[in-house]
Length: 271
Figure 1 (tube, rainbow, N blue to C red):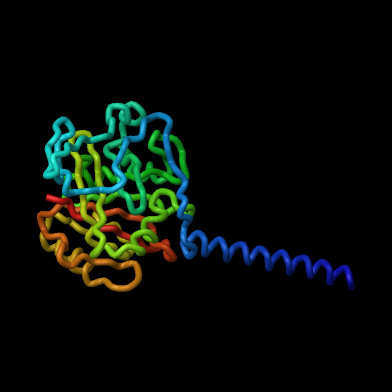
Figure 2 (figure 1 turned 180 degrees about the vertical axis):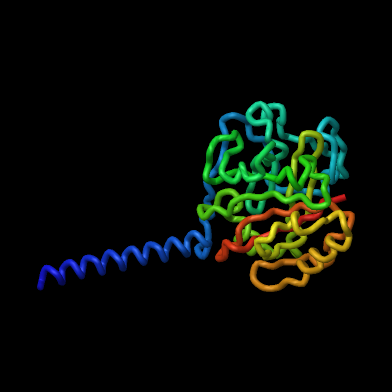
């Protein structure tokens, strides 16, 4: 009898501990715990990381300028594209750009696979397998020059804070109406600067598949719906809502606490 009780006690303890571990993993994996502030640095020995400013100052650059030319800003300083795309292309010809932002700090290449849009969900910027994946755009829906009406960059929301892991948490701590935030996209032939104008929640429907942003009706339907949102994680710069004809960049990651939904950061290219 004592032996049976001992076995029962051991099995109960194992089940209790296993249940606790599974519950902890559920909350951890779905982002109920804030990711760490010290984010793991992803760096590739195959190429040199560009020297970038600590603060993005759009007033000191033109919104889009040639990588082969420098333009004097109002302050008299000059601005050059710091990314060596010749070097990057030698490491991986799928690298089409470089994303840089300061809150959270993100400085990584952007890729576009030639044949499989899902490839960089699980591959690094040099093409090897990596659970973190890479930042990427889809060839089926976007051109690599970021000249589409809406371009979407996808990336994982890693629980350790890497990739877009800190994106939602960091922007939730910033009032983007009072403290404007920007995203820089360096391209082989140009540099684009985008002003973040909204952060919203979205269902798992593919934004570019279900919306033809070349049509004004689809454009207005999507952005009107976005600007009607409210609640936690939603921020709207109402006096800078994207208008048909603008160029928009969207960052897309899993929503914290609900992996069946997306967290979208909407940014409008400065003209």
